[in-house]
Image 1 (spheres, helix red, strand yellow):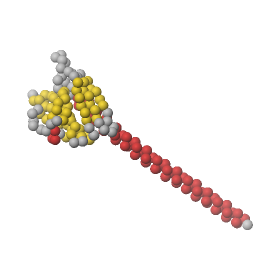
Image 2 (cartoon, one colour):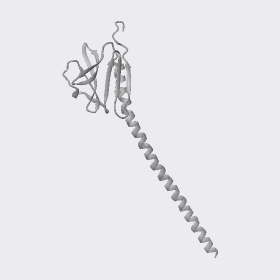
Image 3 (cartoon, one colour):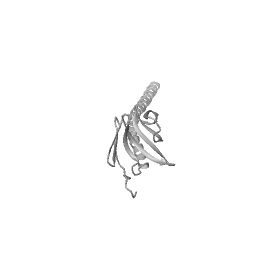
Image 4 (cartoon, one colour):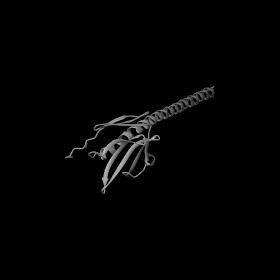
Length: 163
């Protein structure tokens, strides 16, 4: 009779241990699944934010580097708005064009009147769209689409003789 009670106690003990182990495995699996979904959401949000903010910071940095009196302008080439940054190197005039074409922001650095077209520019960053407007010494840059943003840049070297 004692063997039966002892055997029954061992069976209950083994079942309780296995049930406890099963609960632990289920909790671990649930935690991994939830963590994966959270990671996917964070990664997606960061990707959308990255495109807009990096594009704007790239353009802001280029404008700040080339902010010399009368050397920054917004023009139109082949029907596309182009941010033109001019500079003189070794007695020759060079231009940097920053523009949006075929789903990406592009840059073209060449000497003036080189004959190169917008298709010759290098892809810098893929994005859904880019809008640029200039009013006096204020440049407005906006990336469109999901994760887009806007930026206003004041051109500080606007052409004074003593600058």
